[in-house]
Image (cartoon, rainbow, N blue to C red):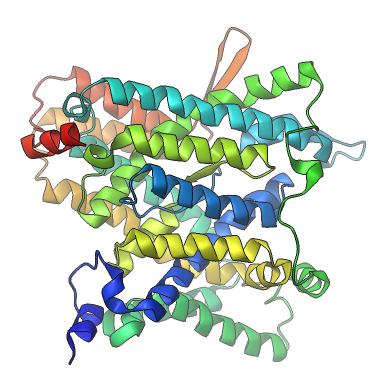
Length: 456
């Protein structure tokens, strides 16, 4: 067996995928693209934004994030679900029949609000740049980040099950294929189980469809595939902010409705970066640091929104792919970003990928979301968090109960502004505050990490 082949089938993490060769790196990149595609295109479907624009901005946002973070963090920036409520508040209306519809003329106003929310990230990044990272890290020990990571994965579990319920046979085939290839696969098949799972389950879905089960593929998506052009521009003039936002009162209303959501998404960003760091075994909080990751995420969100795309966020699905394959090279994620950009210029190909049955996406998500939570457990175990101490139990307990118990979020008013914090955001804030005020802290930020930050 060659040295290159040992790299592929071994259990050791791969930090430099160039050793695998260009063809295999491309396949790994496509796998990340498929992992993010289902959730990324769902946001424009729910908000009325354009799918092609969404894919373009996801790819460009990811590349910008990697540039800002010194090409160190293997994160993919897909569409954020956190802002769905903000879009609805600005664009939705009810007709005489009681149906909720989207006023597309208001989409640019909603996008402007999201663009302003992205700029709020820059404020927090400045705070991280001013204060010493070693001091900041005291607020994010494993007893806080571990349960938050667990909550991120389990919080997504409901959507995976909901998708699986549309066709459990296809979902289980997709899930079983991923497990079989990841555990017993040889060579390249061991590190592309998700891609193979999608191919196999889609083949079964095609057979089922021809056998008489007409519900396997969405008829509307089939028609959209037939109608889609092979080549098309991903940005549309009517969706961009410039030139379409002229009413000052609507501008103010949109900003007030959406900007406060950034308080929640910034907390989720901290949890996501912690999850990626725990997955890869690297301390991205230390280097490149939140000051860079927040700029990357925030500016990507602002840029995407100005051109008619949804807010961006670091994607849990792709963190799950990292955990499953143990290929941690950011280059692979940048390949996925490039694929997303290319797909944005081909409505036909994008429509073909969106044709993948929801159940298959659910089956793949089933294991990816579980992987995220398992990473949180590992984070707690490897850092030897002492749960014999009541303060640690209390911090973890409050985080988990807030994350899963507050299903609809908590809303409150500050003057004339209504702010809604998601359960995960409340959990993150509660855990950070409790850890800060309760006595008995036992987490020590490594001196060598602090030195590394200062040198960077």
